[in-house]
Image (cartoon, rainbow, N blue to C red; front, side, top):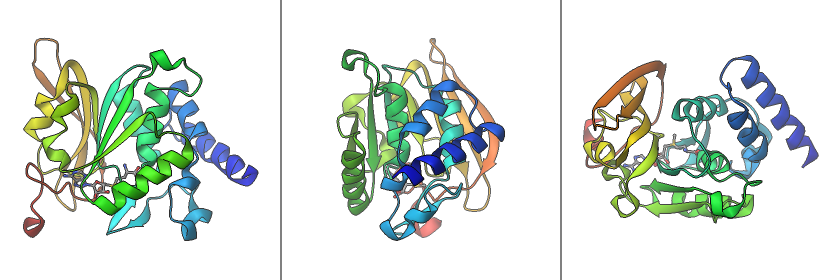
Length: 229
Ligand code: SAM
């Protein structure tokens, strides 16, 4: 356990040095969430390598630097309501939860994370991981097609999509609160760009491309259809 803590501290230090972690908030959250509880047992020894790892069903837990950067771009704060599309292992959802509902903040100030996953087996395991890590009361995992968003709890202050879309799904734009932000990778299998999408108070949409990235496909009604990818 102590060994993992030391490895986590070292990883966070190098993410700060490399410029992926830029704020105190992201640093604190990444220092608190035990990534070793979100990777498959036989890969735990790799939990603090800065690399994506397989989690089954052809999917991955994203690399720590990507989680850090997406959280920085999303500019998360205590009390926010966030939709994550692509729960995967649940790790990124836990980091988001640690920022919108920090463990050391009063519960009345807590925000909430709704995280949607299309593969039921992954959603179930993510839920278990989140419970073991102490985030079950701050993250709700839903099984479904996240390209349609989760209208039941809309609008969201932030939307974070962790799979690559051919285009920005309209339902996600619709479910963003005016003044809200979405971070989403857009592109095809070999070439994607991470976008920051801002919805202004007057409803105007501004899209800012950032860096090239590589994610698994966002599969669904407003994403890729499996036969085309
Ligand atoms: N955030 C995850 C983590 O921390 O482990 C990593 C996510 S993985 C890179 C992308 C996930 O998106 C996969 O688990 C995949 O099944 C899921 N996914 C793809 N299309 C989806 C959709 N339309 N709705 C919900 N989840 C989807």
